[in-house]
Length: 490
Image 1 (cartoon, rainbow, N blue to C red):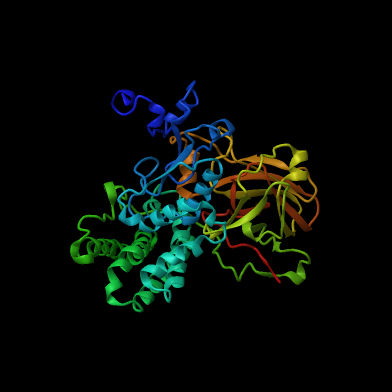
Image 2: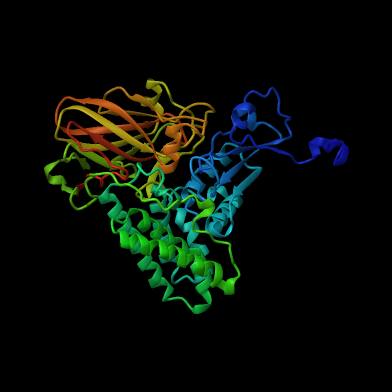
């Protein structure tokens, strides 16, 4: 058809092939895809790119691209209302794909467009210069947007507000707070989450008072509506007070009415829905009891009692934010680096560059792979289980799981695989994308109490690690968000 109606030489007609959803495994069965067609890799609809070009695909004349989502209608649950995909996730995944040859076409699914304006601009600017992002400057790249739209005086505060908005909603999107009802926060975690949401609302109102009236509409659309609506949906599902639940639901309706009927004189009439496809349901979310409250002061212990340690066991547990490694040991071809704007507490670590080779043999892991070292004081000897919370990213090697290696002190490294599935019906994948976390556990024997070094090596580049927790004996469970890091004060 193309040869007949467009150009007899079809290699001159731009064409793409996107192996989306169930088509991806079928693509692997294809004997030949014409070399001139651009291969557009899809994400999993939740912001994690499913495959990357191998050496053969990288050499194709048609090249490669990416089809990416910041809004989605489908399983396991829609997210069509408030855009909450962190800019850091966009940057981490898209620059990784770019480094693997996806430099021809970048496509972004934005759903209803208006809720995704900030993410959309971030995505498009990144497409012009993917390597403008270096891992730690995520919000340095966003601040100029706020300076242009609202002035340089308030841009830093607006950037900070939205960074916290993305952090809270990375833990659980507003559309997923009440789904499924049994996979949510403890009462303590819910209380802390609600308090954090309300602090953001107060900060938003304080900035609004500093702005001239002609910026009211833009401010409401870009900042006030998403922050206040997210706070309200959390209050609706997580508040123990039934009266407050009703007030929160009424507030969501009122905020949406303002967006549709008052902003810009009703210009965006019917644009915004606070319950797309009637999927939120407004059922009461359950909470899980108990989880120790996150109180950083309670777990910050004096280093004078634990010489050489940066972290310490408390109540048969230690918790570590991955970016706070005692030592970042570089590898032969890569290093661990911090990513600002990812993870439950706003920072995580990953591998730079993502094109580093895979190290899956113990001898090579020890000799050439980059390593994170954590100095931990353990009061208890015996069996320890260590849980690593990573992002549910996909390996740069098609069909393989993401892996890391882990050991205490000079013990041989254990290679641990993250859950891997290409089916949206897989229960573990569904849980992982809803909570933006893939949890894996390894077992270790500690022969004597005292100072120990926990080591984590890269096996596959592209892995993103958020936090680590160790538990011994009578530890009472980590909960959804996990307790605060058990840090030694310096």
